[in-house]
Image (cartoon, rainbow, N blue to C red; front, top):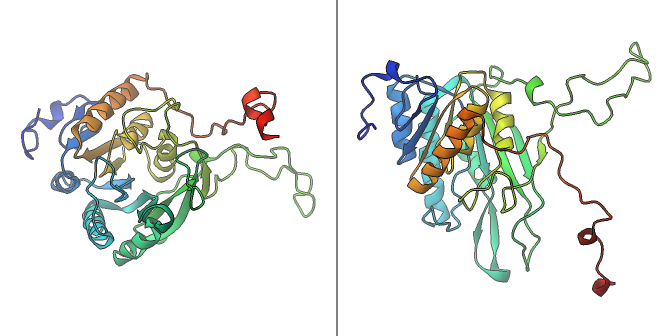
Length: 315
């Protein structure tokens, strides 16, 4: 155990798959209990850089792990986090911010503020370049009575530089819809037109969110799926690169990084979430953690299933 913010004296003695409480470059995973700025300071003091910073920050909607504040104050806290992240982002690195909506009011009085839109100008203040606004869509969640039910969130993918950044398309390709399609004209007429490794997954990702019957579900009210982060880790980093999550929760980002041979660091102020995350990370190292494959098709019920049929009472 490391006390306070002091770095360990014998970092080289840590085993290569150690789960550390404080940041050292030799550790494969760091789970820091405390403010995200303190962890970022440790990474900076160690002279390391993150190739990918990916997180889902609190949405300022009054969950048990956040203190609801006026939108302006919330945005200032986000600006503070982003500014700190910029200090440790590598020259070829990316920042991915996964957010939903901030809601004011109740019932018919509800007004939605899309956090990706209000955060975008802050990222631009730091000279970041938006590469994609990725839409994560999912089929289940709380239902609304006075507006359309929300079934998507957004990932803003920014790079530090315009044309010099890590991007590996091949590891994240998805199966072709028509793998046997051939060119019907030109010099390549008759040749297969697709890539044998698959196609670009595009900027709309349909993945189930983590609810009670999800294979990955643990004790966090806003847990997101490992597959959502795996695609970012594989596409935007290389083996042994550092991946940082300043709002780690139950450490889904750390798990995704560990599963693919990256180093990872995450912080959270809620101890019980980090303890759950530690179990998940150790299981990831051991190869025993069950996750949903990032390319697994969304389940469609069999029309013959009685639950999928219109009940007689509705006819």
